Structure formats: C-alpha cells, structure tokens
Length: 180
Image (cartoon, rainbow, N blue to C red; front, side):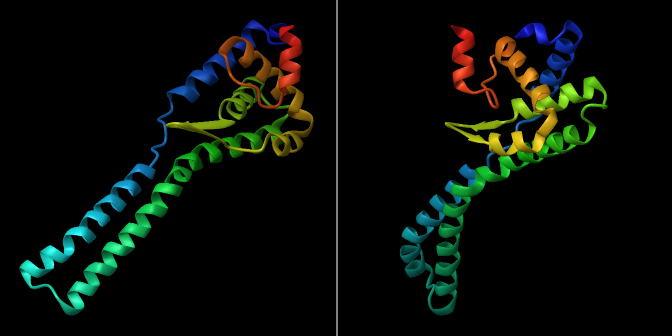
C-alpha cells in the first residue's frame, strides 16, 4: 500500500502527524468532579458534629446542607460527563478538517489536503485514561467525505502501515486480507 504515497507526500504526512502529536492534550476534568463529590460527602458526614459545636442551626444549617448536597450531585454529574469537555476540542478539530477537505478537494494544495486527511484519521478516537472514545461515526463521515474518501483512505493505509494507526475507514476484513 505504501507505493500509493510518494516520499514527498510521506514527509508531509509525518510532519502533520508530528504537529498533531505536539499539540497539548486537552485535560479531562472528570476527576475534579469526583473530588468535589468526595469533599461534599465528607462535609455532609462531619456537618452534624461541627454544627453542634459551633451552634449552627436553622436557615444557615439548611443552606449548608443544600450547598453540600448540590455539590455532591454536581460533582457526580461532572465526574461522569467531564471527559466530554476534553473530547470537544478534538471533535472540533476533526470537524473543521472534514469540512475544509470537502471544500478544497481535489483542487486544493496537496500538502494541506494530506494534513487534513491525517487529522481526520489520527483524531478518529481520543484516549483519556482507561477509555477510548470515537470522535465521529466513520460511516457518516465517509458519506460526507464523498469523492475525497479514497484520498483519505490512501493516507489511512499509509499511516496504518508506517505509523501503527488503527483502521478507521478500511474494514478489518480488508486489513486481514492484506496481511495474508
């Protein structure tokens, strides 16, 4: 498959890949939600003892309970959905790359189109900690890419062969056939 990508194109793809890898990884703020929930639980457990010692009662006590309960619920929601914020940047980058490639293909600068295709393949998934999530549904993006899909698949196959990137648009059966 690598014969479909010439040496100059390979250098461009490697440069685009290097640029993508050098970008700062978006922070997953989910663990902060977990910490907030934990602090709220501790606060709710210790609140009765502290309230007795300092004479906290009535409206101030109820307000403190409401704030701690809200922090507990908010922290739990934040810990579950906090990772979506970190994926959002990558999803936005891929979305812009898809849109631009569709607009410029086939008359755009080859270097730019190779860089866009590299982004589309490399950022097809985002890994944060123990989980990996898709940034897009390959079948939907394949349809959107239209006539530029074979160009993207060409880049994908080169990346799979030379950089160990997982397949996105190339089916696992095709990968298996090539290995045989």
